[in-house]
Amino acid sequence: MSASNDRLAAWTEAELGVAGRVREVVRAPAPVLSADGDKVDPTDPEVVQLAADLVATMRVSPGCVGLAAPQVGVGAKVFCVDVSEHPKTRGHHGTFVLCNAEVVESSRNEKAREGCMSVPDFTGDVKRPSRVLVRGQLPGTGEEIEVRAEAFEARCLQHEIDHCDGFLFLDRVAGAHAVYARQTYL
Amino acid sequence: MISAQSTGGGTLHAITVLGHDRPGIIAEATAKLAALGLNIEDTSMTLLRGHFAMTLICAGPAGDAEVETALAPLAADGSLTVTVREVPHEDGSTRAPATPWVLTVHGGDRPGIVSRIVGEVAAVGGNITDLTTRLAGDLYLLVAEVALPGDADTAVLAAAINQAATDLGVGATLRPAEADEL
Image (cartoon, rainbow over all chains, first blue to last red; front, side, top):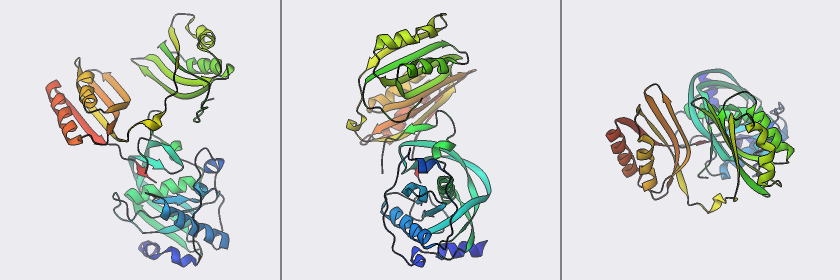
């Protein structure tokens, strides 16, 4: 899998060949956030544009380390990630976009408190595997990629894949008293 | 009928339901509120030593007396106590910026643990936004979500809490409740 990891780490949005446009981030209870996103053709020019737009929107959003298509109002299985600047990050693969991604292996559950741009008024304690193997496709070329991720990047990938499948962190919280009113905003 | 969205208008009622636990209390209570056109805005319910304890805030056109009358059947057999009180709309936007922390205290049970520990939080202007205490056997547990003022010296507070805990013979930890933004 290391070759795929290297391929992903070397990927930049410049490969998409189109300029990203900043889109508006939608907030719950927008129905698109609770709907299973459609699988996409990663070579479709519209999907390539969407990928570029997701990266552009992530870049201008303070503290944002990942953004999924449903968060910009598009019910599709496409998301971008970049945890490289986050203080909690250990290993990472820089900026990348995946289409039709799924978790194929996972281990080592850890609980952490999550926040989400689409749920700005709450945070919640969510238990997720801290090591995952994710399979997906690169936008543009459609190459199939497998990426092993751990810790913060693993959590981020699962959070974004959940978005693509119509789940918010609220669907995963550890219990009735594991949701909190947010006191500080980025 | 639980809605995350505030109706933003109408009378706000604070309702408490306390007493002997049994299945169906929430279903009955919320059905009566729904029938009055009330929207449930926030709810907290748990079992305290096996006793049902629920507090909720709801909004709508009905008055306190009407809500009390509607909920009266819940308390008819004497096993539950229901109170209804009108409360003002609170505007959280005027609150000073605060940082979220989690306070955990556990140790041998004795009177005064909560008051002594949370007294240290209050002394620096900290606001407790969520609190659970539990007693199981001899083990006493306190877990609190604490909003500390931006200018609070958290190292000094943590030291004060640790000193109070040492005096009480319990352990205490104060740690930031940082959320991962994803």
